Image (cartoon, rainbow, N blue to C red; front, side):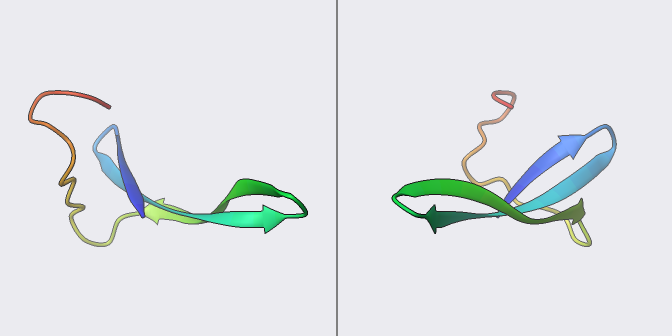
Length: 49
């Protein structure tokens, strides 16, 4: 699960790595405005996207 701040809205993004033949691809399972605040434990204060 991931989140992204877009304007004033936190967006929840759920991805999955899927096997397609001999390749692995990323597949978006869902994305929507977050119902609850999203915690970003790996994001440093004032840094990164």
